[in-house]
Length: 189
Image (cartoon, rainbow, N blue to C red; front, side):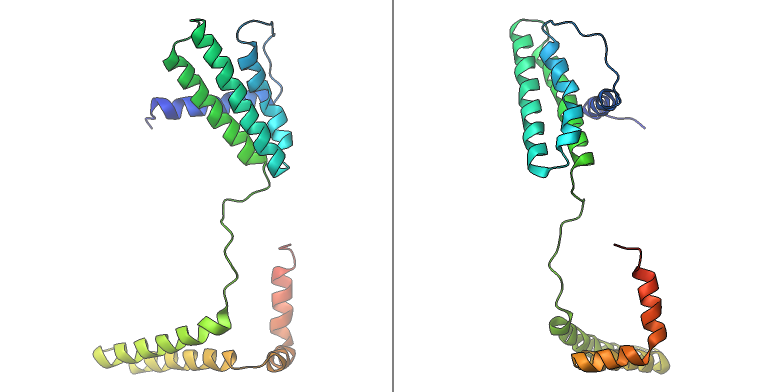
């Protein structure tokens, strides 16, 4: 697999973050690179702070700003070229984002509002019944298949018309289904 230079640098950033988080440190002496190293070593603190969303974002932003400021001073001193500084910063940003994202209490899913099945479900079922009737009239679908689908739609419509008390009575009349559901979802907390 061939990767671009930027992808390679992002991977290197994540690799270096892994080394820092595992406690691997070269001997440190204070020089022009110390602020750059401090930002990389700060990724361990970022991992701890990321457990609180707001504090983690502030730590990440501070580390990225400190790293960029340190690289700017190295560029001004002529110790690295602007291109090299940009590449180093890309790697650091990728590492900081990776550490923050891996430890923050977030998911990769965007929460969606709970659907209102009763309101929209009946109109959807009515539309499905109309489409099924139209398809059956225009094509050579097996009449037994059409009848089975129509029965299923009618059963779903009947369930939508149940009151809360009727639903509870139906559940009570079928204890096997209720027991199976409770076993299935017991460990999903």
